[in-house]
Image (cartoon, one colour):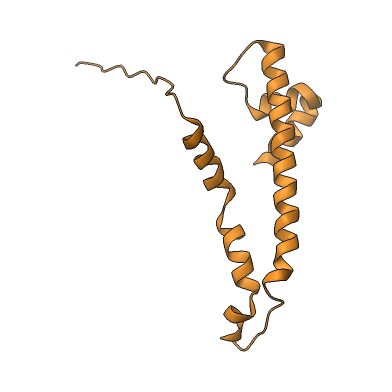
Length: 114
């Protein structure tokens, strides 16, 4: 028989498409439904008056701040690791964990990542 060989070529992505992907993953269903879930309008149908939209705003801002700082710190580690190894691609989170936390810390963080 004949065997077909396919090779994957990395595609060029624009800044706009990369930003759209990032924004799409950041705006998950939890971020969009939390204010609705605690709003008095939604819960009034069930006879339950929730704390309201403004109460969920600080929790959303704290979560957003934490995720943004985590992403920036992870990006910083990734850029440093790319400079240390000379590899521009194929530097993953598990490699970062093992590099900066050691073997045991890397395995522990890897399990926590799951």
